[in-house]
Length: 146
Image 1 (cartoon, rainbow, N blue to C red):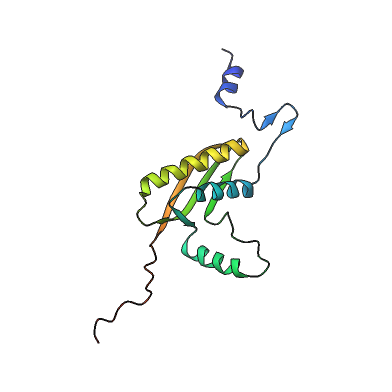
Image 2: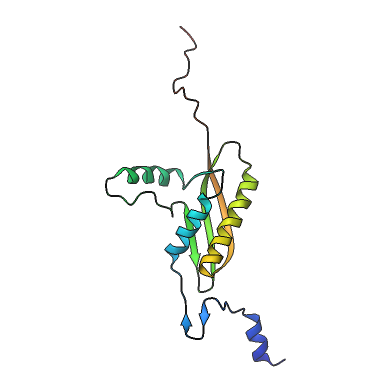
């Protein structure tokens, strides 16, 4: 096999984004939104983002005229010409199996991005930052001494 042919085979070409008429590029913000929505679709994901980002997001949502929740909160992406890598910061519901939930999130995010954009997702890293505890309904603890 000639060296030129071997070189072409070594670099896989993503035919979905490279066409005879040009190139299709996908913005980082598009991939972030897809990843955020796909992550939130998985049962057991309570919210996304680190503590500070969640607090800022809650304040931002209350401002009149705001665009509502930021679906890209807690999502970091690196997007190349044909590949993407995703980092997610999530809060899980108490009682959920973190290992199973993480695999479900990885699978759903990867499938959604690849199906919608044509990019190859090389990794989806899931960072569990907190556990959401169920509300007990009683905000004050009973007095220990009367």
